[in-house]
Image (cartoon, rainbow, N blue to C red; front, side, top):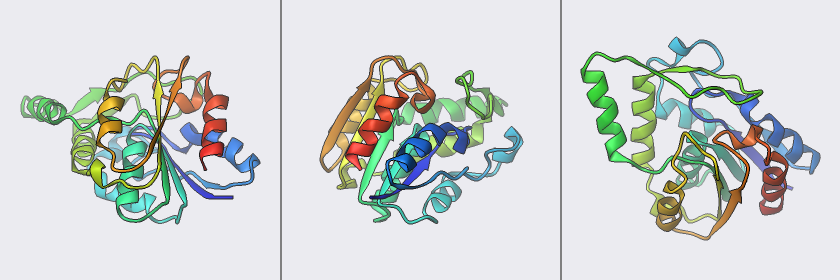
Length: 210
């Protein structure tokens, strides 16, 4: 059995990962799902909080496998670069995109401080508006995570109906990773796959991978 760390995405909470926590715990694994700094309160709590704090919080709990949803998936890659785990499950992680950083910085230069986030998934707890500073922190963190250095086995999960992260970005990520990559397509899910209709399929695949 493994120690499994489950990381939510930007704006979410540990509640996002609860179905996985329950399923993996029932399978005999030891599972931990923290709510990352700046999350779980009000959107203003994210102002001044960034990639370094999120990664440091994730690194506090020793894990064999790190499972991350969206931004949490890239944090999982970053933890593997710090020898913080032996395997990664990345669910709909954003691909590196310099244009995204440029676009956010352009909006910030025009006086925009906030962005409306996507609607919350059913059962999700999180923010529906996000400070641009937090989005820039995430985008910069994604760019700074050297995927070629990720040598641990990776289960890369893609939702067919992701309307937040372009599913085509998974091809870039898969080609960039430096180790063995397994792929899983969730045929009925949107971005927050941990709460979606394929969550049982997802939990079974992660348990088998772990």
